[in-house]
Amino acid sequence: MTFSATDCAFEGFRLTRRAPVAVLLWAAAYAVFFGLLFLVAGPQVVTILSLITQMEGQAEPPMEAIQPLMQAYGVIIAWAAPLGLLFSAVISTAIARAVIRPGERRFGYMRLGKDELRVLGASLIVSLIMFAVAAVGFTIISLAAAAAMALPALWLAVVLLALAMVALIIWLSVRLSLVAPSTVAEGRISVKQAFAMTGNKVFWPLLGMAIIAWIMAMLVGLLGSAVAAPLSLMVGGAERMIGMEGASVPRLLGALAPMLAVSLVVNAIMTAAQVVIMYAPLSAAYLQIKGAPRA
Image (cartoon, rainbow, N blue to C red):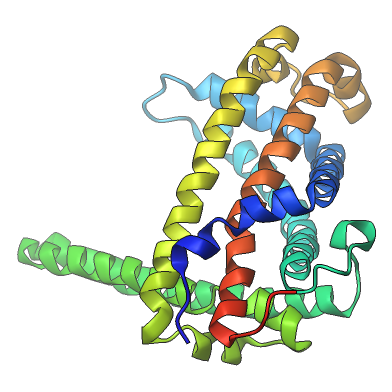
């Protein structure tokens, strides 16, 4: 069954109007998540900002500056990856639940139960698939580029391979886009089922829906940035972190409390709004493709 791409693309706005308290609770959850990340990786963020500032204007940054930069990024990724996957599963499940089973309003549709664990498992499978495809594609393109160094005529093949890789990633992203809502609706990890749902008849409408939703999310982000800019100037921007390399978290909180508070609130609200705009259409599309009635 086909579906209306434009109708589904605006589901995030309808959900915000229908359940504004839930969206505010998701924003609060993002604030807690961002705050927790800063508590465990705040010094590394300061280190990155300080090192990048020091390397500005240098054609070839020295290796002694690159190494601590990579170490700081490694610490942040080590904390952010597992926490981010779990938190993303909770939020994406909550958004899918709000569209597919809107009567389950408790805690702003947020839980930490079987649905969330299934979505987490499905997300890991999708991530592994995308990583494997990207790794193989990057290896092939790198080998072709190495060959093109000796035979310049092969650069056309390298460009074509790169374009084909981008097209494959987009195709896979669309074909696996309904994994989360399908998993929530069917009560089981539904990677294969979601892939089968997004065939030729609905592929292009799904891609169009995703593009519309992405554009709207970016516009909301730009609007939020315009509103947040004066607030950031009032309390001082991220440049206040520069020069505090090596400071402990309590010292950072004491020195940067106003800036961190404003940044936390603004980023939490903007992120929640953008995520709802981009994720809610997927659940609406799932219901229309399945021919399921809206609750």
